Length: 142
Image 1 (cartoon, rainbow, N blue to C red):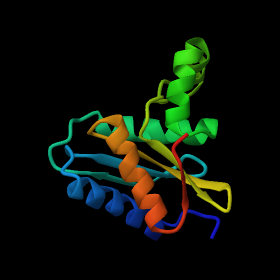
Image 2 (cartoon, rainbow, N blue to C red; image 1 turned 45 degrees about the vertical axis):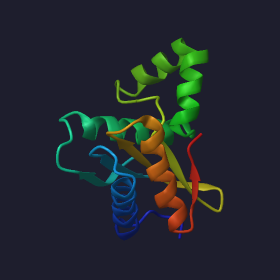
Image 3 (cartoon, rainbow, N blue to C red; image 1 turned 90 degrees about the vertical axis):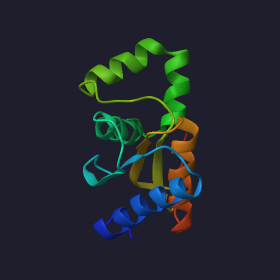
Image 4 (spheres, rainbow, N blue to C red; image 1 turned 90 degrees about the horizontal axis):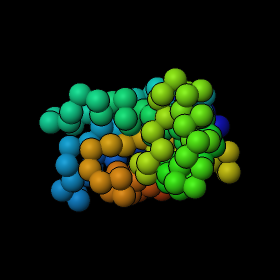
């Protein structure tokens, strides 16, 4: 399996939300993108705010586009803010460099990314990591 199938993307998104429920987190929005940055699945729990889909996709899109989990992008934004601003400009303003964008790897190869938003960035990221590892893939949060 080198592609992120719709079935796998749906499973990952549902596992993220299940983990959020177990942890009693705020309502989440989950975006699962394939390796080309195309949206495969977007799930929004009841009670999420209207910008959450864009934020979730921006976390995942930044991870895919830069080949780094969004935690690493967050660190880089602190160290090199002008670089991240330039990359965000190239991405049309859609890059969200905060934790919660986690690369999905299979045998070291990026097959997609999950972006989550709605709770703290650390909790968002933890749900994505949990879901990815639960299906036997490698989570790369950065």
